Image 1 (cartoon, rainbow, N blue to C red):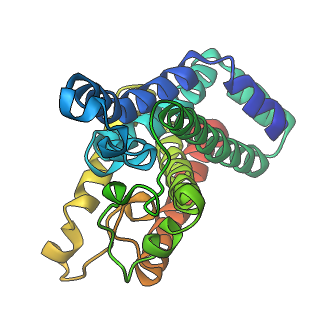
Image 2 (cartoon, rainbow, N blue to C red):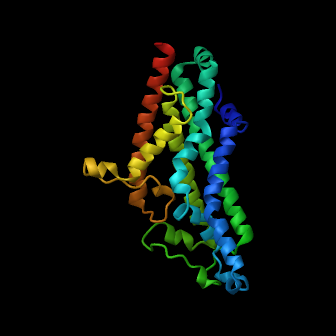
Length: 269
């Protein structure tokens, strides 16, 4: 089995494109109404520099829209349903017979991570390009009214000072794709235990929401960074590193859960 073939097979999957469409809808749920409101207002129609910039339209769906709320559903929908279809068809058992179970598990987890990261990158890139086609790029030197009030001590403020804030868009896009890949692996780890396409989306979403509610602080008195830290606005180096540590722990747990589930299901009946 090949990771490249596995990723290529995902492009023919309906769940992959449904996930891309879901994320695009979350992005456009903010950008399209904002753009429509601007152009329907006679006061701003003649002065486009007072309309939201391409940067604001590109990221508004994250900061103020539904991306953060539906992010775990998008990540789980992208790849994990294909694993359930493969298990139900009996192909998983045949593949494991031909290759070592550990090799199979690693290939699947890497494929899940890369496929979902690619889906997130496709949706983010398409939406960002569309926003730059319909709105002015972020240029506060020529259009001071476009300036976004970013925290000056955070990571994003100096990146926003680059040409059209492209470094800032690239950093947020990278963070979004990495987080999407992590949640896809978490969803994949559930599939050997539960062959239900609804539950493999609901369970990661519950973990995501409990983390977002900082459940560890309520139980253990330990505060964690938000799960969307990598692609939200108030980013710091320390916050990103702490978030990376939490994701690393979750990924290690997901690897163990997935391998134990596969072993229990296909080696020990």
